[in-house]
Image (tube, rainbow, N blue to C red; front, side, top):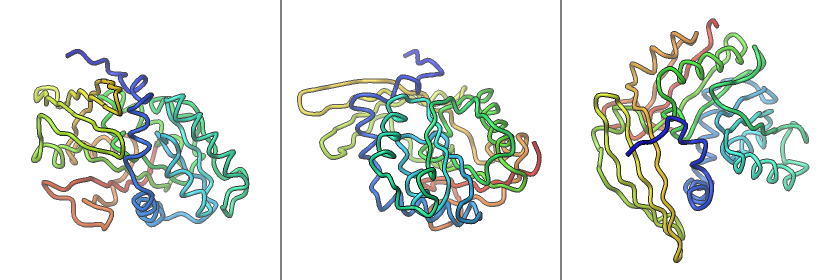
Length: 259
C-alpha cells in the first residue's frame, strides 16, 4: 500500500479522532503531567510548548498546575476542540489566569519563535510521524524556540527497542464503543511501519492508513545532539525505570545547549 509521508494531516477526524479522545484515561494524563513537571524542572508560570498537542489534554493539565502552555497541532479539528474546551473552562482553575493556555494551528516541522519557551514536550507517539529529514527540521525548530538550558521531553512507544521485540502483524482493541483492527507491515530496509486501521462503531466502519518511522534510542540521541541538545536521561516508564530492550515506552529528557 502507498501511504503519503504527510498522512497525519488527514488522519485525525471522524471515528479515528473519537478513538484518540477516549484512548488515554485522565489518571494517565495526570501521571504524565507529574513526570513532565519533574523532568522539565522549571518553575510554575514557566512558558511551555506542547507539540503536537492534539485536543490539549496535557496542555490543560499543566495549565491547571500553574504553567503557561502553547499547544500546536496540524489538525484543525483538534485545535477547534481544544479552543472550545478552553472557552468552556474559563476562568481556568490555574494560577496563571485566563491566558494560561493557548492553541495554534501549525505544522510541527515549522515551529515559530526564538528562545521563547522555558520547556517543551512531544508525547503520544508523535515523534515517529516524521521521516529523517523532517525530523531534523522539527528538532531544529524546537531547539531554536527554547531558551538556553531549557529542557525538551519526548515520549514514544515507537522506538525500535520497544516496537520490534513484540511486533505483531495484526492486533485489535476495544476502546469504549469503538472497535479497531490494525494490520501492520514492517519495512526493514526503510525502518518504518505501514499501518492500516479499520474502525467500527455501531453500523459504521471507517478505515485509514498511517506510516511510523522507527528510530533506535541511539539514533534519537544522535538526532537530538545534532540539533543542539544534550540528552540527560532516558527512561523506560513514567516510574523512571531503565530503558531496556522490550520497554513499552521511551522517555527522553534533553537540554538545549546550543542552536
